[in-house]
Image (cartoon, rainbow, N blue to C red; front, side, top):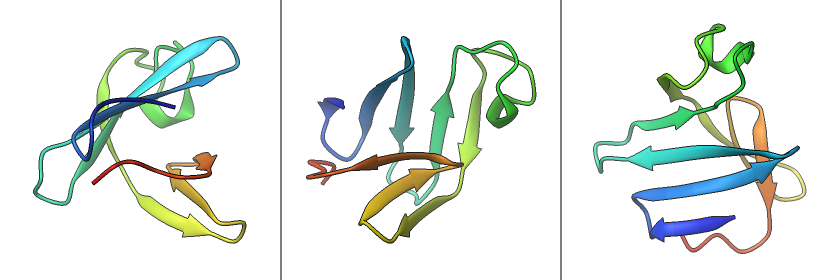
Length: 75
């Protein structure tokens, strides 16, 4: 995980690609996945799409099925 601005912009390295996230403070998180056939982007690789944020057991924080574990310096 790379945090550009805590609580606003961060990214994850997953399987050789960088998945970027941003939060505008309104409660909406968007994700940009460069994979051209990513289900999260509906096949439109590189598009910013809104994501659902959830906590799961572990604990892990997930955004549309992309999950990370550990300390999250997001706020």
